[in-house]
Image (cartoon, rainbow, N blue to C red; front, top):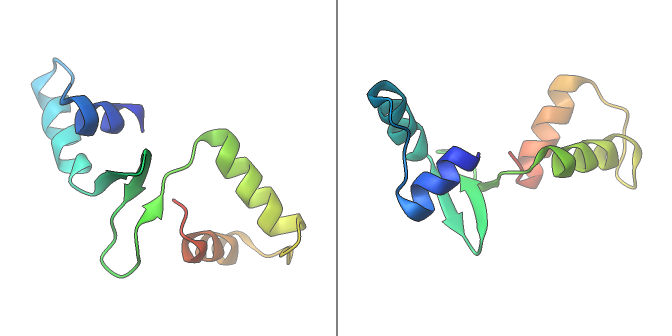
Length: 86
């Protein structure tokens, strides 16, 4: 996430040419909006990229919190994507 952020914001990229090409291809699917990094998808709206701490909180809240259902991993992944997180 940090490499993509730096590439999009500052234009910095790795010194390794192969890694640079991979990063350029990967960064095409990301955009910075309002200070947050989002991933573009064809069939869904922008998905907000989360840090590890944020993602653990979202998963815990969806599994056990107010809207919790104790669902399986595939259903949980679908629900997290539906809410708009990546």
